[in-house]
Length: 213
Length: 257
Image 1: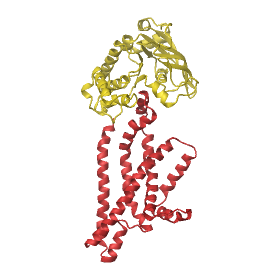
Image 2: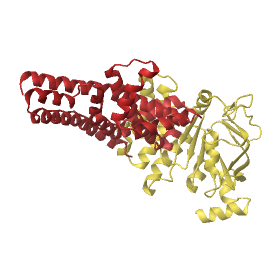
Image 3: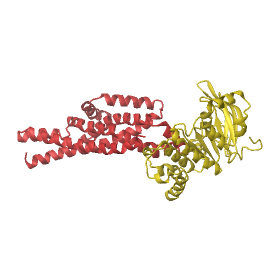
Image 4: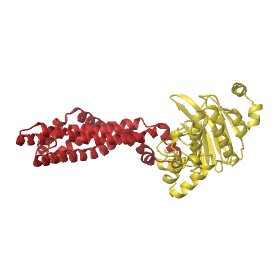
């Protein structure tokens, strides 16, 4: 592989990283919001969210990406490729994250909540000061797991022409006629990204040990 | 019990309190006045409703009928008889302090921050002021050497003493103890009871649910016996333990001693 091939590869890697990164960031927060709204059990809203979560979890990423890309114009919405890619990844990961947050909420200690009420904390202060710090730590293994699934699923966005880390290896080998080196390099870069996430998870688990009473 | 105590001056005033769980009445027309500085112990066999009664006082359980006033202020229901807004309820609750059987410390905060959390975020105290007060309270319960430790490194007795400091930090009108030593190994019970005894000597108002008879006798001004949700005996500790008027209480005391 020559310098221009490496250059292309790194550009593809960057595309994967930033599109996944934006989707993860939105997806983690949106998942938390959906979990909170679902805990409030608002009629109709709750059913709609259940429908969304089951649809998003059941649809393959490639299909979802294509669907958004092809259906947006019929609704008169003009989405560029990157936005479409982010939207698809976000819709997918949010659904999984919502379930992760929700189960952490449901399993949160009633005793600790009662202790917070007993000292006069409002539900909001209890959430903010007592629950959230612990929920983040307990949910993190699941969330990081989901992040790595998202990164590994991200080549799906190539279906609408985004040149990500996987797609770019095709382009390089079309010029160099050597398919193996770029795909090997791509694998190494995926492993690096996932490796960073796993390291983050270990860090969190060390902190989580303290929570085991 | 002093009949002259007005509800306005009583630390806790419970009137005609009733509560059912799934059709089973656990509290029936309970009346109880706790004067300022008084220590009231609630005794009874398990399932008699004593924990429920205690948990109604700070509205962790909602009674079906009756009223509870904390230092003259009604809890749970506003003047028009509607359920209190959550913020108002939280404010009234803050005037009571509760110590739980299973301690219920917050594991993500160290000992000092378990104690300062509510004063800072509920009362709006400054961090410095809250920590100063917290350190004094930890000193009082003999836990100042563990201020930086996390709850999972403490023994049960130490956890409970921190939980007492946490409740005291809100400077409540009344302290509620829900079987504070029932989850402790026998050799750790003494250190927690000693702290509660100190508090009674300092004039704290307390309502205590316990199975420790000798302790109840030593610390109480008034002993109340609950049976199937009814108060069937109330007396000063001497009379209660030596000369109870009901057969049921005498049986209970025989079994417990």
